Length: 131
Image (tube, rainbow, N blue to C red):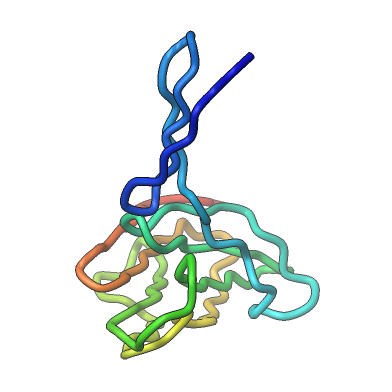
């Protein structure tokens, strides 16, 4: 099957007879920054240029927000809390060239909220991974 690929604003659009499929040109991958024993249990895009990775190890959650490519330092953040608590219990935010975090929270038996920021992009997940 023949197809054409066109890169537009960080996305690859592949055109085939069946239609057009769009996917990130170079999505971030988990960089292992939480340490050994932590495994990725969830992830979510933060805008079109970063991904937040939630990892877990023996009752501890770890979160890191990673840009697709290193670049000039700009605002990034990683935020974690138990869902029963009103404000972020653990956060790491500032101007970074590649990633924010890792941050850790012991939350066995609780639901957690987690969020990431990259420039003006923000994404949050609420009441997840309960137990």
